[in-house]
Image (cartoon, rainbow, N blue to C red; front, side, top):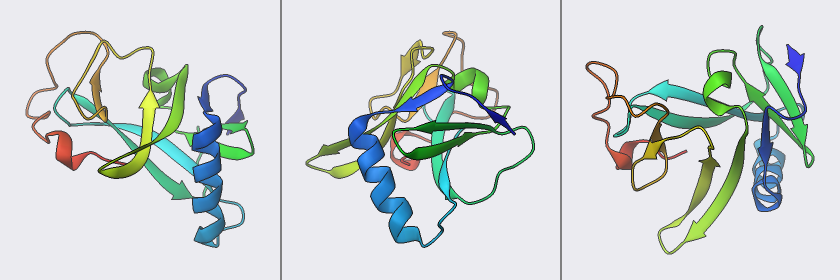
Length: 132
């Protein structure tokens, strides 16, 4: 596990919402795991989960009172990103503002970094299936 200060960050509002969720989870040492997986309408999609485990190779960032955990495979895709929380008429949810994304689907949960096509056999998940 590596502690980093600028690998990923969280907005003020995102931190407020994350702290509320973490407090209600009952897991005192938990953090927000942010990860990337293949799929979604643009090739990759973001995922987030409450996690009280620190795995080998994780990068751990403490920002605005929130522990963010990123696995070593996801870090290259997420480095420099900011986790945020958006509220709208459809509800609300966490999102990732990623400066490395070169394209994204309309819902903002799926992205591509190099303009290439989605990985073979993947990328058909659609926007509705990738919300965090």
